[in-house]
Length: 104
Image (tube, rainbow, N blue to C red; front, side, top):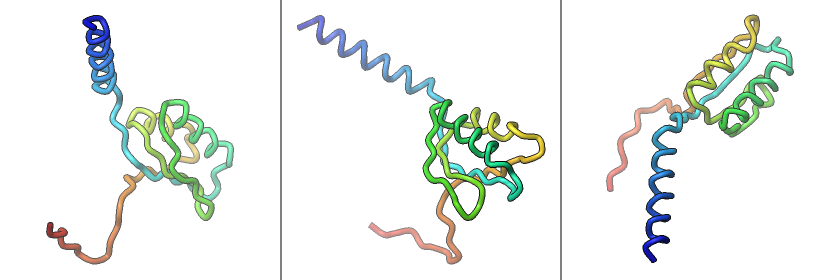
């Protein structure tokens, strides 16, 4: 019984340690100029996925995508092409009216 309890404790500490060193992730919108080749857009999405990020949505009317990524991978994605630089914005809710906090 002591061995199994020790293993559970060890695995718990490893999980906490890994979470502490994992880069912080944020949700962003990555959009490119209209004349950007599809290959650059595809390369950016592959870089996000390879670094452990997630593509949340791919846009069809504009060249871009929504993703959950770390700041480090954003630095890499924004420097993939010198002539077709993306615009990176935090993803979030946008309103045109002031909203009051909900009362509990």
